[in-house]
Image (tube, rainbow, N blue to C red; front, side, top):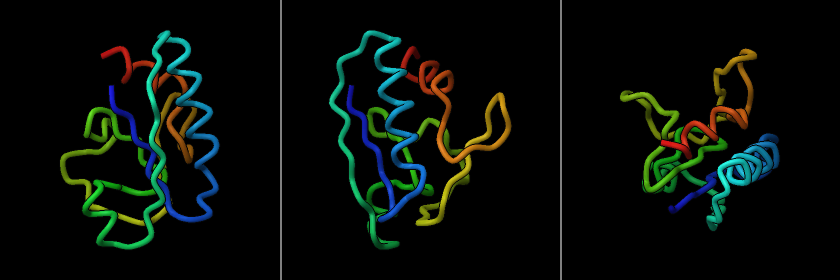
Length: 99
């Protein structure tokens, strides 16, 4: 399994996203290398498939992006069981990793 965490410089939600991702991996008993990549330009966002910061890609796709998602350097919101947040929840990531 290939996992990438894409983020803009000084992203306030990067650490939360990484903690949630590590917790979800542990819950699934998965040992995966998470590649973190700083994205600093619109061209990089398009090339790497970043739809806001932070973006988590699993096996080359963003499981939280809709079909009309556009590349973006903006802060990203994830909608979950407790409303909007700057990172996907552990439960959301666990569901993605289990599928």
